[in-house]
Length: 86
Image (cartoon, rainbow, N blue to C red):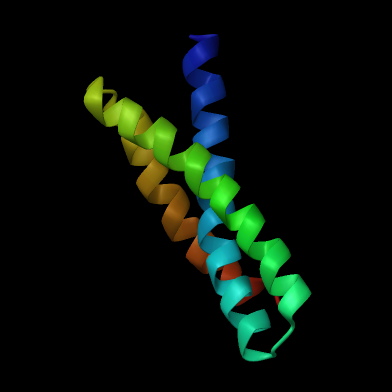
């Protein structure tokens, strides 16, 4: 039970961060801020690695609760982009 809760928290945070960081990275690239773009790209790749590993593993194990949280967290990450101005 505690393991699933930890997976839910990890996939939620990493997936929201991934989607949020994708948009932030685009913004700093457009602003031609190279160092910030490199830093945000690193964070984005880390979030992608964690969320993808957990999401794919959950799908292969037929753990649809984690899969649903993965999908919903991506939507929340997009919503955060409209609410948080960086």
